[in-house]
Image (cartoon, rainbow, N blue to C red; front, side, top):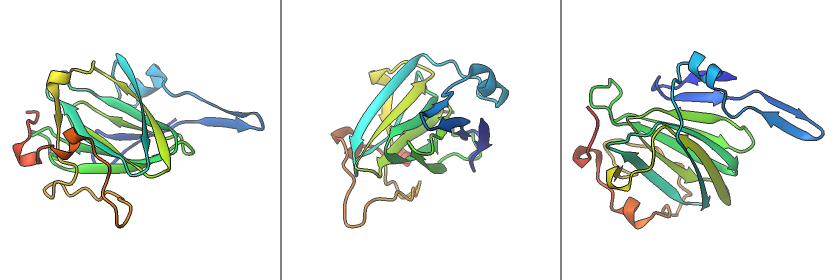
Length: 182
């Protein structure tokens, strides 16, 4: 496996070793010892599976308590996956990183606690799997506005369209009004 820090060093792109032949492929999607050696010392307590159609934008989600680190991968289709640093004491506070994740590449993105997470579906539909370091806690859930100009995410939205959003995501707060971490 190859572990590569992004321009926000705490967010790590993971390229698994994939063994392919005429029958198909095999890969490890998680190996605690290898992840710990790369600096990801997380314990995962929940697995999530999401399916969405093209043009759907989910996020930017986080939990102000029970903060979740997420190990994200795409098993069908492709998405543009985004993490935003919400740790006020961090030198990268308010900065974002985006990465195209595809079923074909099999890459993963490690997003540590203290970040908001979201993705935009680029294919006809996509299925996203992610491991989380804490349980889903609805009363702690928060959402930052996906197109907040202060953050300035360069989403690859299909020209001439508007992302498909949930009511919750459409009503999200801008960063300057959001609950953030110390």
